[in-house]
Length: 479
Image (cartoon, rainbow, N blue to C red; front, side, top):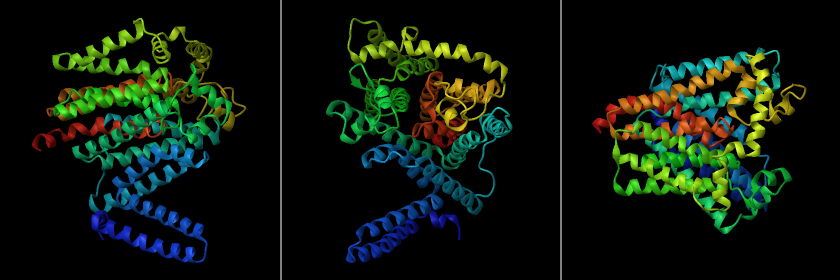
């Protein structure tokens, strides 16, 4: 039987009806016998089986389920009061099933490789091989390596899945709409938190321990996190999506759609301000600078950059004061910030270790992970707040060169795709994703939150989009 049969809407509808019928029988039985809890557990189990089948039979739908699960699992955990939900294991299991479905589907319907052997892909594979070799790092922890590689391989599998899913221009547009809707809802939820106050479940979560209060309460107010895992992940996500929307508002769309993108971008920037994350504030100008550099010959788009530049200057140097404005200003004077000064001292202190260990100290040997998986390691407990610093310490300067080279190739591919594409819609997608991604690479200097879900899903998808979008340029031209 061909995989296309399994993907048909008729088959999936019949499957859903069958699962519903199977689920309703035990529910009725247990309700009659005054044991409804067992019936509910059976239904939850069958729903789980149904989701697994969908992940296997329809990888694109399975990917959507996984993305939505990773987007909303944190707020679900707060509502039910369970912080120990093993969402990472569930995510990895769903991705594994989807990947198995991709392999089977490719074998039955599209024999042959679906991988594009580009410089981005080759560099990604080489970096993965380098991390695998880290198993033999004499300074590393085997337990830490196993834990770290599990997470890394999960994202590499995600990369391969996305390469299969984003098979044409329309699939890229569908994915873009998916994450835009989720991030827009995240911004709206932040407005609810700010204007109506924290719901009981959010307040219980943030006040559960003194450390969490210290991280989220500043200047007499709560830094907001929406339904994400933490403030840093949320703030950086809003900065990225705000940049993306503002750039898209200059694209070849109707006036109504341009206005929608512009308003959405401004709302996401406001939500970013409510997050109180200084790194998020600081990276916005970098994204807009890339936008300006790529559109110097287009006066109609330069006004956007000029307008935002004027707003930024007014916010930073204008005679206005308040909790939010003061917080934004501190992001642009990092040398006056005590936490940034401490980070600079930490970097200077640890530089000799980086020079002396070209392959690093091993996976999961810094920070809290080091205390847990390698408590006797000299890096255990060291606060590697930066993604780049963490890579340099754990993977050595060789690993850092791999990482920076990889990010450079993605930005280069985005800029090249923008100038080489003929279709204006393809060009604006290249431009928006490139500006957003470049801002994220700057954020990595101060934060490690880039791969927090759901932003991590979008980040990995950008690897694929930069590679494949140009291939669909002629397809869109004919449409």
